[in-house]
Image (cartoon, rainbow, N blue to C red; front, side, top):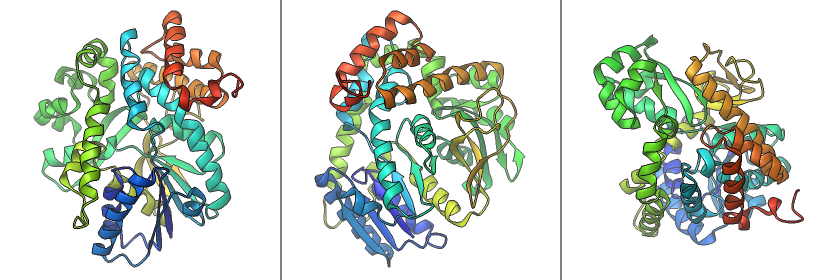
Length: 424
């Protein structure tokens, strides 16, 4: 089996490498191919990856290259974890919307919209190269944010793709710790859209213990997701952390307007990490990596790849077509929910309908995501404005018009489809 990682210059990559060891019995990897357009970062990260694999006794081949075709040749799995424009572009996602009274965040609202516009065309180009170069029946596993929108674009284009986020596994680990049990005994029933989900059941050895969890540990859970305890009790569910951008919009906006952008903090952590990775004596992931965010994503990734390779019938929370699993959404909407992983991929498990207060929000954002994919591909400003009008955190015409032009101006180097003579 060959696994290709596109965007392997990411500081996340050592965590992915460390998790390959855990799945060694299920994943017989003959080649791990690391590719990135930033050769400097790739050399550093690839060097550490090589030392980690040597320590693990990895018997396969490690390829480190800036050549996308070489990385993709014959790959059975293509993992995409890119950041178009780097942390500088992320800084724009987090700061440009703020003077307009809009949340600045790289996956949600106006910032997530900007990131999607510049990311989708690049991911689709990579997917087209994978279709030409990778193995027959190869899988694309997308970790690139905004995961739900990017996965929708891949599926709309006919690619064999599945999206993965770390929110579910992070909550699973939290609940397991609070219950003082092994994580493998805990199943999280999380449903909605990417970064817009609710945990409506937590099963310990098959029995739902969410009511007991909320009664005994509600304050700790609320603190972890930064939402009021009373909200969890009223919903009878645990919202994703990202729902604080909706439920506490004005409070979060005020925090962002007077605070320091997360992009600057991450950039500092990344510089320190890369300095550590360059140490020729380092052969394991440093603890500082935990401050980078994205906890447990690599465990979720390698577990999903192993299940896809075996078609084992395991259940994973992934981003897939709805196909009737969640009432109130179109069959072709991309939802994030438990799915059974078989030989043909992921089959979403049928869900109880969302509560009205959740369904209405999900329907609005699903419409926004549909329009955003179309805008990213066509460069059509009218469609882009309609996408912003559909988003519940924006939704006003003068705001959508002015905000769109400012976002396009800020992201111009990465948005050729919106330039004069571009796609439209």
